[in-house]
Length: 310
Image (cartoon, rainbow, N blue to C red):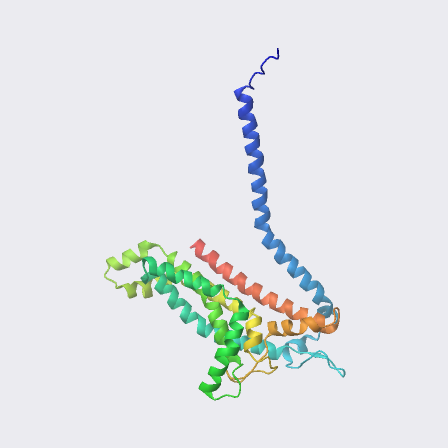
């Protein structure tokens, strides 16, 4: 008769279980490491691709004075092609300025109300609504600017066209407001409760606590939120393309149509021969945009690091 097999020793089973747990732990540790560096790898890959496509134009053919100081963008001219971005830079800056004038007061007011005054279910609902606003696609905002704000501006200000700096600025302000509100609210909530309790113990009202204690303590976080909002507005494409009028002019009033840097890339890249000077000039604009947004985000990151070190 076949003899029954004896069970393995308990020590062997424990060793096998420990080995299995170790391999599982190492697998997930490697997986988390890869996920953590993937964002850096993707950003680096994007920068390398953009720089590779535009570096030839920058090094060999670009006239730096014309590129930054000339308002004439005529990349397809048969006589003499010109690649001036001054009008586009001015238009982008004007739209961003109006967007921040709209977004910052609304965002900071909403963040203060959510962090300091709202309670319970109201706070949760407001945070959900803000997240939903952030999830609206930019093309939908562009339709709002084209179909709603455009005729509204024409009727209100008696202008010939409502696709202008003001329209694009209002749209970008509404688009940037949710991210500014979320970051500003986190900065306000990061202020220790002991600050509030000490101010209230001295007899300060709720608004005095917010104005004289919480806001000064959170000023670096609020500035970081504003910088990230500027980066969000500066890099927006589709909504600006649909709401700005896409006219190559240096704006002299909020009712002038403009062309943004991002909108130029979106409108012209698909119809440009690959490898041409026009194609490479568009990627040079992309490098310029990448550099500006990178500097803005790095500034915000340094400010946040300053908060943590205080």
